[in-house]
Structure formats: structure tokens, C-alpha cells
Length: 554
Image (tube, rainbow, N blue to C red; front, top):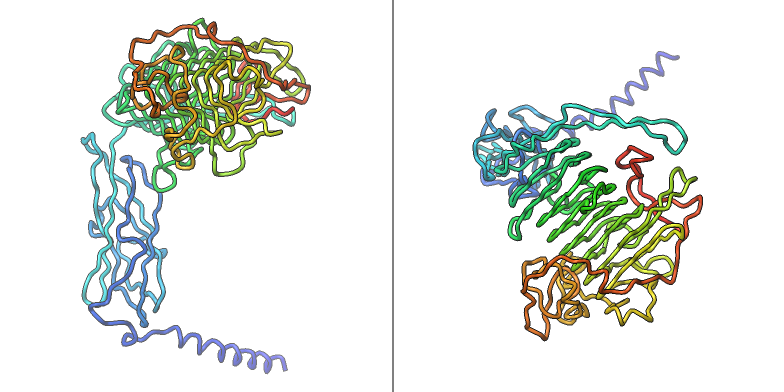
């Protein structure tokens, strides 16, 4: 009986499988044989953006379509350059140099995956590398072009590693490892871009001099680390700023935040200077630690810091002077000035229209204390936090509609906040003295295209002509155009009724004495549960350069 049942089961299975097997077989005469038939492609050319030599690219994919009523049998798919090609392909899972007898059903498609890996040469400029995927079928061939622009580069690869221990939120000790390389500052090659993987360190008592045209590209989890007693000196130009950016720039990666770490001016670094730079697509632009002398920890001019997943500039007990800056499009804050310090910004635009998700913090956050392990509060004086001729605006209404400015104050430490001739989205300032200080509160600056990251001023912008020429630190704006008199507020000069140009020599001076101190209507007092705003804890209590970002709450 059991044997009979098994025979019956075999007959049933065979009867089900045979029609399926027969239907999947295609006779040669069933394939399309028309020599004029053509395949269709999802792209007319598979293009790669700049490819650094010796580094494999991302994998691009292209679909190959058969738009006919009959199946097509492709005799071979290969690269025109053969084994010498700088491209590699995967044809629907076949990685051999020549994929044979590839079938595409009627009105069906297959995937081909493509990578490029370009050999270095002696060229300094980007060079074009070309090849093609060759499809042979129906006694003719069809080609799909492949292109990539190769660039020779200097590579900074980790050769050592250092570790740091810290106590995590569970009270346990964790260890973090930092792979690093030491930069040979004296022999920096200015003719090629530099690719940084891991931590590239400017060692103690060394200065990294960067000049117009220098380009630094960072991989994932990669950082420029200016160590104790070291200095970063950046001297770009209006036409060729020094570039700090991510390796990937294909498609949406061109402006994608969070692709690398940040420039870390660690505690003890000194006299750092940046003029004409572009810092983009990282976790943060600059992390500036505790000041060690009477000079600014960082002096930065004529620079753009944008598209960072956390913050543009984070100052931690630092002394920072900034002028003609555009800081925009960051996931948490644009400017986080924490644990006290001294800060002065003039002629700058802080504009945050972050679009990836809802923000939970205003564009500018300032505090004067430090919280350790959420148990101990250490007051830290804000000796000065000054904003002159600046725009602070964005799409964050804030808690209680307080806007894009948070003054997070402890009564146990000094908090000297100065502001004059600024356009601000905030409701926390005393409006009774706003007019006397030349402040414009809660008015849209009317940027040309905020969603498109164009922060030039429209003709009707209230920022035009409402700055104070006596507060200027530079005779030109971020475009290099002369400032008018009176100047516009923000980083970009706009049209004005007065054609008088403010082009005389301007000296750097202490402008605090020319303006009044502003007090806020709301004070945020730290409690035992308060946490400091920012990406890192003070190196005095915690050696980890980045742990988490927390936002101060009332």
C-alpha cells in the first residue's frame, strides 16, 4: 500500500513538473534573429565621478532591456578593453571576463554591475578613462560606453593606533581605538589632492600650511586632528578656497552630510587660522577645544561651512573670531558655543533650513557651564559672545516659539552676550532695546533661495543697508564684492540705495565697547539632570573626541 502511494505521488509530481520544464525551454528558432534589433539601457553612458587612483569606486548598476516580443540570446558580454580595462563588470551574477549565452526574455531585463579602479600616472589634472561594455548578438555588436575621471592623489593611511578609555552611560569602562597617521607637514604636496583615511594628525610643535587650491578628501570615520601645541594655517583665495570634503560626490552624495568626521582643533592647539576655505559634508565642520593662550584658538574668515549632520562649529571653552562666514544646513546646530569661552562673529550668515528631518535645536546655542556625568555642574564663564552685522535665521520655531537662538545661562558664571545690527529669528531678547541696537527681530531675511542654499539677499530683503560700517572687519563680502555704506547684514552684500563703497582700510578692534550688552527675557538654569549642548565632553573629564550630542532642556 505504501509503495503504491509513493508511485502515485511520483506520477503527480512528474505531471506538474514536465509542463513547467517544457515551457522554460526556448528553441533556437524562438530567439529574436533580426540583425537590426537593439537593446535598450537605463543609461546611455555609465559615468563615474572623480575616481582617486588605486581606490575602487562604488558599484554602479545599469539595466539592459529587451523590448521585443521574443527573447534575445546574447552570445557574449565583455569589456572592449579586455583584461587591461580599468573597469570590471558583473553580468547578472557572472563575474567572468566574458559572460556567454546571456538570455533576456521578451519584455524583460537584466542587471549589469560596474566598478572602476584606475592606476596612478604622472598627470596632475583629472584625466578621462574610457571603455565600453560590448554585447554580441544576432551577428552584430552593440556598445554601452563607460567613463570615469581619474585623479592621482596623496594618501594618508593609518599606520598606528591609540586608545582612550571612558565610562559609558552604564557605568562601565569602554575603550575606543583611533587609527592614525602623522602628517609630514614640511613636505606637504600642494600639486595633488590628499585622501585621508582614519585620523591624520598634525603633531606637536608642527604647523600644517595649506594654500589656495589644496583639496582634502575624507573617508568614513576620518578626521584632521590638530594636536597639542600644533597649528593649522589655511590661506585659500576667493577663487580657489581650500577644500575639506568627502570622497564621494556622485549624485546626491555631493551634498550628503555625515560622510566623514571633522577638523579637530584639540585642547592645546594654538593660533589656528583659516581664510577662504570650504568645509562640507561631515559630522561637524570644526571642533575647537580649550584655549591655551591670549590669542584666538581659531581665527576664521571668508569661509563656507555647510551640510554637516550635527553642527558647523563647536567651541568648547575656546576663543574664536569669525568674519564673513556662511554656516548653513546642519542637523542639530550651526554654532554651538559651550563650556564658556570667548567668541566674536561679524558679517556672517547662520542659516539653517535642514531638510532631512525635523530639527530639535536652534541654529545658535550658547552656554556657560559644564555638566559631568549629569551629577556635577561646573560653571564656565562666557567672557564674550558677540554678534555684529549677522543674520541668524532658519526654519526652526523653537520651544515656546523662541526661534533660532538659545542662551543657556547658569547664574554661577559670567554670561556676556553682545549683539548689534543683526537680523535674528528669536523672541528671547528684550525688544525694548532692539531698535537702539539696530536689531531686526522675527523678519524673514528674504534669501534668494533658502531651500536651494542660495543665501544672497533679494532686492527687498530687510537686511540690505541695515548694517553698521563701523563694525565691519573686512571691506568685502563673502563674494569678494565691496561692502557698501551702510552695509548689508550678513555674509553677502545686497543692492542698496546708497552706492557709496566702504573700501577704506578696516582695522581689527574690540567692538564690544561700542555696543550694549543684551539680556534675555528667559534664563535656562542647569539642574542635576541638565546636560551640555554639543558633540563632546571636556577633555579634562572625558578623553573621547565624539560620544553623543545632547540638547539642553529647560
